[in-house]
Image 1 (spheres, rainbow, N blue to C red):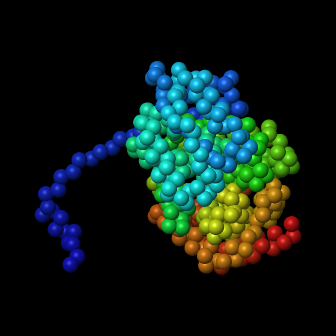
Image 2: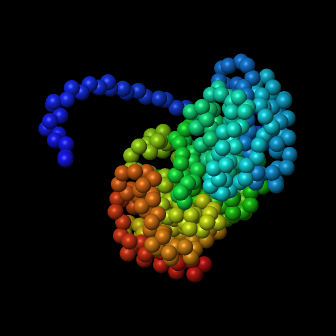
Image 3: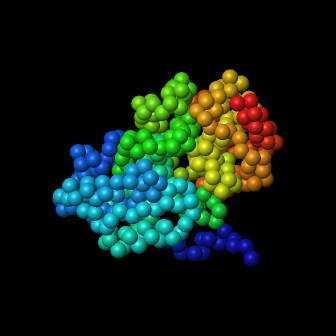
Length: 394
């Protein structure tokens, strides 16, 4: 039996309206050799909270770092002893595996929760997350869900984490075969970018973060895209000054969007995920052998090609985008792109993850994103073919 809305007047309904705003503020610091005893950045960040007694901290470290920074755990311990008036290391630093696989293991999430509980970490204590984007996603989710949120200081150690994933307000882990199915919106207390960590990245991880810079440049800043295009050779040669400029501008554009847009994604728009609907699915289809930045580069190539087929990008713009990606060393085609039934399931998952209607960002011009709510599957299949053909001639 259907409820007759006309009968609603028969019910005596009372309500109380609640409305309030919460202001968030956090700083992104740029430094070098953070755990050098001469570098007081971390101690100063913690001292800024105005409370005089030393604060408890725990440190969770990406295990992938230890191959290149074997003394890192000891450096953290020594740093805490040197700045004992400000901070106290509640337990020895713990290590978790690096890479996307860390987000697929619920036991690791539980391990961090257990550490928070055993160390007596409270909402006025600090969790230091030190590592790449996937590890920071896990640590951030753990910190946000312990005591309904303890203070998190992110210390990103990859290009991608320093200019994108490590500086925003999102945390999450994978579940049910879906990327970031479980997660929170929880701004960090602070983010500290240490350029020293970039010097030991492998070429793949150095390159991956550039994909996110290209993404935000394509939808927001043609001048920034021109900078990347013109400095492709310098980036490939791993010129640190060029990379630092790229990281700073990319981070700036991301934070401007968060501040002026929809930081907690209450609506259906998600422009900073340009190229990501396919990227997320390709990561899963390749069993995460494809790194996030590599998948994003393919997703950018695909959505740029689709934009070109729609008549929005000129041929010259389309070629410039793909040539820039290829010139940086990105592979723009993987066999999983041809599995269109599985790939296009990513569109449904993308919509479900955000809710509401399907909303994709495409390119009207370089530097100008535009939102669409419907896609032409046949045209997307043509786009896949064009990307494949482009890759054959590299």
